[in-house]
Length: 424
Ligand code: GLY
Image (tube, rainbow, N blue to C red):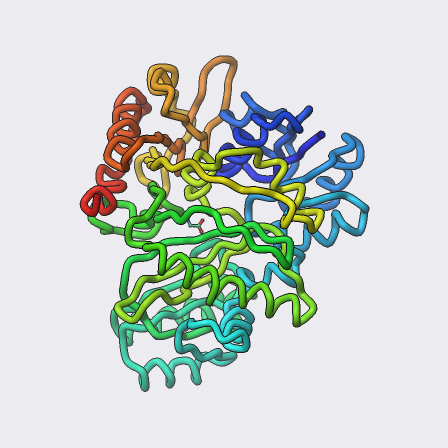
């Protein structure tokens, strides 16, 4: 089969790495890819939002299956576009991707599905939103309704902060149309984790859970990032919690989407918060997580292409999906300054030494290949993943590998997976 992956980060490197291992894969392309991905796939310089050009490429290259990494092409309709051209693709339609693209759509849908979410209200004017914030008090969560590249959510500790967030969305229009409507939600407290599933709209096959570290500094301090590391499994997600999330949240959501004429196909990512009163849904994403995919796929014991193909063809019930009973830890190495401004073009050394341990795999998130050298080319540069019999073993292997890698101003958190090790 000829396969195309759309995207350019660590998630897409993990996808191409796993797809390349499949005996079903004869040729692999990635648009646009990155330095590390270019070692397993042919990178083609097409923007992820250029649906027409991606469709043309898939037709010219006779691509049998396209797999989409980031949310943006899904939200703007890449699946609809490819299907209208008779091209096979893995992911949800634009109507189904509203589970990530519109917070109000999701909150209202899960209410109809009877899923435990958060108390919320939707506002189309700043004055009404501000009045509601004053009535409710803080802490409180303000979200731009639309997809705002992960920047549209404010967990406000004070009423003033919440009002500022409303103004940023609705008055200053910092997120454009995505912030024309805001959703204001109660603030829940607890550990966050995610459970993703493969689904063809009917059959639901869960992946192993994972936990991401969103803040830049150790101890969960500092600004939010795309994710500074993660681990799987998550001891806080007990078998009961896992079953509750899959049976009482995800399955009813998928069933409700089908009932309402928007069958959801592809990966559904449920962001969960473990409150004192049990698990509650924080958000849905319409894609694989990043860096979560970098710990989930190394634990997949089998052929990812078989699963993706069966999902895209609506026959997921015919596939047996198994997971390795091992732990995976991923430590993200970032450019100094991230998530603010940072330099690019720093030479990365030590990559071969870091992978001398067969339990370690390095996923490139933001790199460029120049001849045999790799240069930094993004905020998150590398995801260093290791497997181990225990989380401690996986963590020690991952940090040992990180110790071999160098580039100017490299930054990483030193406490990834500590929470899991404490409970081991
Ligand atoms: N790491 C969070 C996400 O992929 O949305």
